[in-house]
Structure formats: structure tokens, C-alpha cells
Length: 83
Image 1: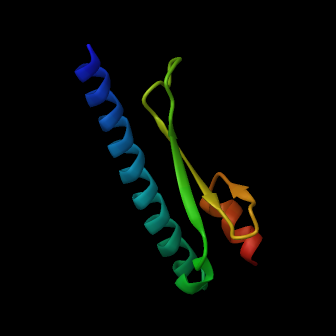
Image 2: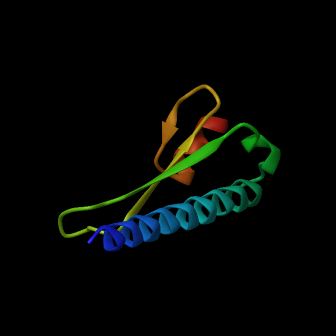
């Protein structure tokens, strides 16, 4: 049972990391296509949470964090903030 939980946790962590990386790269491309520069994201980080319950269990929510501490849920929110 413990091994099963360990594997489940490892899979969740792997999905979380893949989602964070993909979303951050997507944000970089989005900003560049919108006339921005990738260096605008220096100091930014991202985090991801895997939903554990409900109809959307297993989906991953990615958040972008500005150096000032603000959290954003979408690329559009980040682009508006950086304008």
C-alpha cells in the first residue's frame, strides 16, 4: 500500500513539473508574440496544483508568480500586468 501511494505521489509530482514547465514556456512564447521580450519574466516562477477531487480530479492548475509576490492564473493576466 505504501509503495502504491509513493508511486501515485511521484506521478502527481511528475505531472505537476511537466505542466509548470510547459505553461512557463507557453507564457514566454505568448509574451514574445505579443511584442514583449522573454527577459520580462526574469525572476518569475510558476507552481502547479493537481486537483484531487470532483469531476475535474487529475487536472492541473498552473499559477505564475511575479517577483513582487502577486499570483496570476493566466497568460493574459500576466501580459496585462506587464503592460
